[in-house]
Image (tube, rainbow, N blue to C red):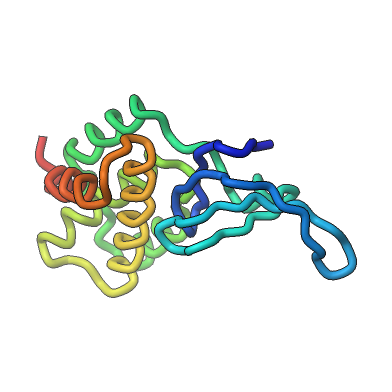
Length: 160
């Protein structure tokens, strides 16, 4: 269970800080919700306390983890399978709750995008990975969105 003030990441809406735990009427039952204002994708996010782990809400990375993730996205990219069905299967199996996986996906797809090999579905996944990565790095480092964006983009070339 999380507490007020905990930094967390939602696998769809991004990173934020729990500002309150509210009790609300949910159909015929009362339920408690984590209140997370100002994520990258929502002005105010309400996450049911009972379903938080099922949804994938997790603690945000530390500043040390952020350094490791920046090293990861600066490392050599892995080539993805050229066959469409294998690529689609890979993209469907992405663990959006793992920040290291999200960083790898962003790095690998960014290199492909620079080489002009990205279809619309792949580009959608790449953009989602970047948004999650950006929101979490900003929260972990305390840097502005613009500063983190520059760090991510300069590391996304896949060079060692």
